[in-house]
Length: 182
Ligand code: PRP
Image 1 (cartoon, rainbow, N blue to C red):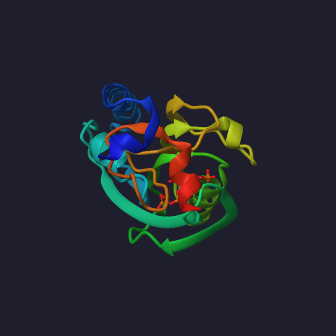
Image 2 (cartoon, protein in one colour):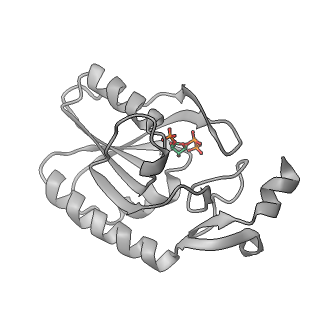
């Protein structure tokens, strides 16, 4: 049923599985003896983080934060708000932030700065998708699943007005969907 609203598949289920496996291998090597906190940024991280965790063959702790930059529509407002802070202390810990997408870079930059201010030993970022054409600040994630062009994408955690997060792949919406709803 959801398939009907999708114009193009940008990252298929199979490709996502390959990407996540490769990221899992690289991250497991780097963090092998570091007992990192894998910090998911809700809500978009959920499918990616769930799949990634299963590919990490190391001891780790999981934590979540909810920060928002988009507010239901398709453009970033430039505001980043902490809706739910993480419970775990990060002082002297290695933190790896798991994101579904880095677009303007504002969300991730604010969280990285906050964690460093709180005394994390290292703060790095793994993102399934990187959209460098959307950047308004300089930010380069340490682990990138796939670099994508400047298009509005949904699925595998990413939403349009809270919908489509449960699609098992990433794709672009048919224009009629957002033209009729806005
Ligand atoms: C989305 C996405 C990233 C952020 C990327 O989250 O999950 O966290 O925007 O955009 P940026 O690089 O321009 O800051 P959103 O705030 O929409 O919350 P969500 O994960 O609940 O959808």
